[in-house]
Amino acid sequence: MNTAQWRYVPPPEGNDVESIAAEAGPILRASGLAKRYGARVAIEDVAFDLWPGEVLAVVGESGSGKTTLLNCISARLKPDAGQVEFLTRHEGVVDIYGLSEASRRLLARTDWGYVHQNPAEGLRMDVSAGANVGERLMSLGERHYGRIRSQAAQWLARVEMDASRIDESPVAFSGGMRQRLQIARNLVTRPRLVFMDEPTSGLDVSVQARLLDLLRTLTHHLGLACVIVTHDLAVARLLAQRMLVMKDGRVVELGLTDQVLDDPQHPYTQLLVSSVLQP
Amino acid sequence: MTPAIRIRDLGKTFVLHNQGAAELPVLRGVDLDVHGGECVVLDGPSGAGKSTLLRCIYANYRASRGSIVVHDRGQSVEVTQASARELLAMRFRSMGYVSQFLRAIPRVAAVDIVAEPLVERAAGDIDAVGEARHTAEQMLLRLRIPMRLWSVPPATFSGGEQQRINIARGLIRRKPILLLDEPTASLDAGNRLTVISMINEARQAGAAVVGIFHDQSVRDALATRIVDMTEFAA
Image 1 (spheres, chains in turn cyan, blue):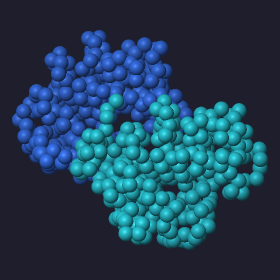
Image 2 (cartoon, one colour):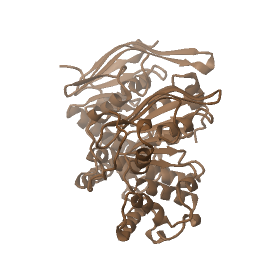
Image 3 (cartoon, helix red, strand yellow):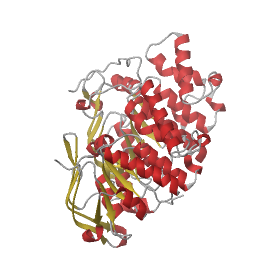
C-alpha cells in the first residue's frame, strides 16, 4: 500500500461533488500518534479516521495539543510515533511519512489545503490577490496566463470577493478578506482534504458569521473533508459532523458533534461545555 | 411487521463529573415499539424524561443501558452501538427531528434553511436544487410566512415564525421516522391547525411519529396512542 511516489492527477472537470465510493474507506487515518518536545508530551496515542466529505472539529484548551496534532497529520511535523495514512485519488492508501519529500510537498499543495489562523502566514503579501490564487496552478505547470487569471477570478467570486480587486495586494485587504483569499488560494487545485487552524478567530463577529457560512457552503458543495481546529464550540457545532476533544495531549472524547456537546461524557468535556456563555 | 423503532429496557442516567460525580437517573426500563403510520404521544409532567427519550432515539443523547433498534426499508441500526458515521447515515436516510427552537445559521435566508435537507440530497444537481427551493417556498406559503421574509435570515423573526421555519425544514423531506419535541408550542391557532394537518399527512403517508405536545387539542388531533412516561421514571 505504501508507495514512495505520488503524482498529481487533476480532478475531472464538471460536477463539483466527486463521488467517492464509501467502500474506499477513510480519506485520512491517524493511528498511535505521539509527539514530545523534550520531556513534555505534546500528543500521545492519538487515533481517528476521517471520511471523504466529513468535517471533524478538534477542540480543547490552549496547550492541549490541537495544533501539534494538526501539524502531524498535515505532514508539517513528523510525529515520534504512529502513522498517518491518506487515501489518494488514484493510488490507494499511502503512508504520508513514507513518501519522498517531493511527493509529500506535491500532495500538500494539490490534494490538500492548509488554512492558517493568521492569513498573512498562508498568503504571499508581496504579490497580487490574483497571483496568490494562481500560484498553486503555476506550480503544477500551468503557464497560460489567461487561464490562470480566469481561474483566479472564478475563485475570488466563489469566496465572494469583487473581481475588480484581482490586481490589488492583500496588504490592502481587511482581515476577513485576507482569510477568504487564503481559502481561495487553497481551493483552486480542488483539494479533497483541508486543514484549518482557528480560521475564524481574530475576526469581528459579523465577519466571522460570513466566513462560517462560506466555509459551510464550500465544504458542502465541494464534498471537502476537513479537520478544523477551533476553541469555539459554536463554530464546531455549525461546521462539523464529528468532534474530537483533546486534553493534555490525549483524545478524551470523540463522537457526533451534537452528542458530544449535548451529552458530554468525560469530566473535561462537561467542564468545557458548561463553561461557555450562551449568547 | 418490524416496528420502525423498537426500544427495550432503555435507561438513561446523567453523571455530572464536576458535581462530585452526582448521578441523575432520568429513565429506566423503557420498552416501546412504534410502527409506521402511528403517532405516539409521550405524556407526563416536566422532568419525566420525554425529551430525553426523543433525544436518545435521535442519538443526540447516549443511552446508559438497553437497546434502540431503528428499522427502515430493510436496514436495521442499533442506535446505542452504531458508529458516528452509521448514525449520520441513519439520520440522513430515516429520521427527522424537530425541536422547539430553530438553531439559526447566520446569514442564510429562511427559504434556504428550509430547502437545505432537499438540497443536501440533490448533491449539486441544478434542477433538483431549483425544485428544492420551489418546494420550500410552497411550505412557507402554507405556513403563512410573509413573502418579504423568505430571503431574510430568521434570526430576527418572532418565536412563532422561527418555529414555523423549523417545522418546514423538519418536514420538507419525507422521512420514515419523525421525532417532534413541542413543535407547536408558540403557534397561533391557525398555524397550529396547519401544522397538525402536515404532521397527519406525514403519518398517513406511513411515517412513524413520536411527539411531545402539551396542548390538549393538538394531542387529540394527532395521537394514535398515548404513552405515560411516569411508568419509566427512574
